[in-house]
Image 1 (tube, rainbow, N blue to C red):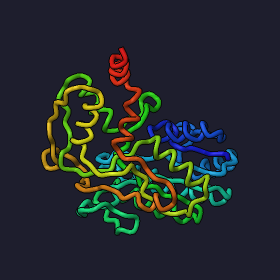
Image 2 (cartoon, rainbow, N blue to C red):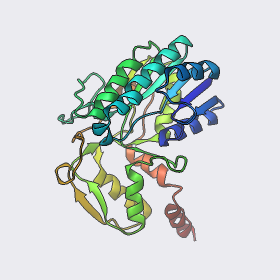
Image 3 (cartoon, helix red, strand yellow):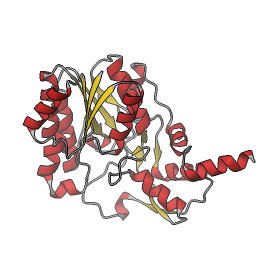
Image 4 (cartoon, helix red, strand yellow):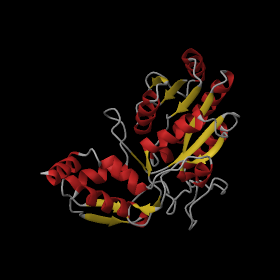
Length: 295
């Protein structure tokens, strides 16, 4: 299988590339400098030249607050760039995988969102991502995977590393970590997302919309506490709430996603605690604790 990965410089793309290459697949990885997804002609040419069986789109405009000031840029990447990729993939008879977000929901629910729940985006970023979903699904062989609260192994230097990295840095430095206590989330480990992505396309699961997150809902405060416990370090936390910080774009207060549809397709996602444990297993602090325990 030949796989074209766009937006190849990011955290999720790094996991996708590792997963597919480890499975022996041929991967053509193009970062933003190599392929600007807002350039429709270049997109058509890149998909054709790659001879891709699957196009996996990891390119995204992820500056949630910045999108409020620069709506056109967010739409160009998150919506119209996806439309260009979907059309190119369809013309080349390639499947498409595109990643969306929990932000398409308003956060007013009190139980995990399922794929059939009505979106209600409350920011420019969220609107751009919902439009991207619609454009992707115009391709009959497309998988749209909603993900959220990503964490994972390092991506190339200079790329965004996710909220957990900032929390871990504070814990490691014995500094107080500012952590949201009033946002309910379902964290997603990039390695597990990559595994699920490969299985969906390899096993020819039914195309469509899936929530691709780890199992269980939590808060960033609980994630921080579990990370500190795993590393054997004290947690100094500065609790923050959505009302206590100045954010230009509205965030959903409750954004837990149900992965039951993914499980029904035969892909069971581990709990977020299991995923976090695996992620931190190779952390220098965890390794030193393990060595001390064997002495």
